[in-house]
Image 1 (tube, rainbow, N blue to C red):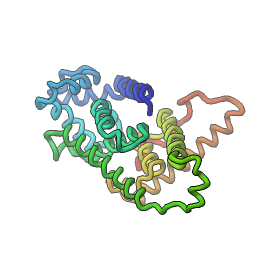
Image 2: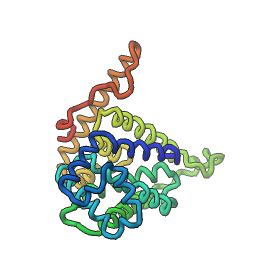
Image 3: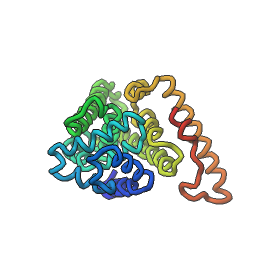
Image 4: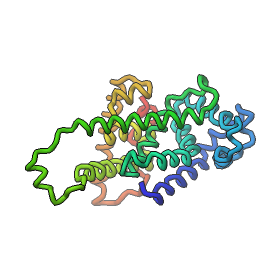
Amino acid sequence: MTGPSKDRDRIRLERELHTESYEELLQRLRQTEPFFQQFGIWSEVLSFMRRGAAKDGGEDEVLRPILQAHSDDRDPRWRAVLLAIFWPRLESIRFRRHRWDPDSDDLWQNIVWAFLRVACRVDGRRRTDNLARKLLNDTTRYLGDRYRLTWRCSEVELPSRREDLEAVADLKGIDLAGIERRAAQAAEHNRLHKHLLAGRITEEDFLLLIGTRVYGRRLCDYARETGVKYQAAKKRRQRLEAAISRMEQAIRESRSDVSPQEGSAPPLCSRDECND
């Protein structure tokens, strides 16, 4: 993800926090958490969290209720709020760990994936202090574990036959396989992201498909980390892929008549069905 593209995603995310759906979350916190009564809109929360003053105990006062609410209802909107809050600090991780991945787009996507997975694990009722440090440290640790696994896999790859090396001698130094892989990943990421933006799949659906189909995360690991049974996760992924295939086929067939407007297609499944 290039700099301008990433900036547009950040602006779009922060703009999303001003919608009625997210304002309802903030009003809920204002009613139950005295500390939140000083905030009228989410942008004020973001500004507070990005000031140094927030580190004098204020960070925990903001993060604890959000993480507790997320632990209770697993609403993906809470994760979007956390991502907006931590966006600058995740960019700092990207800057410090840029040597881990020559492809900055892949690195950023892996950082975001790691952060969201960590956010799903942290329970605001069990851990009540130093929450920001916990989230960031665990994100870096999770990210490092993932890259170390990739590096180990690369080290045990069998060497190419001599004739194969000679056949591509004029392309020495160019990682053709890596280029093709990243291009395919980017195309699939964009395809699924369009369904997310159009409201056809939920954020949780998007993360499931991106993690296990695009970036090679094992489904059993996903199931364990998100607290669902493996067979339930497997069936959910199968239903999602079948529903997406049907929808895309319907869109292709309709293009010869009228091109549908972006976001006008009905959801692939209901919220309850998608979250089974």
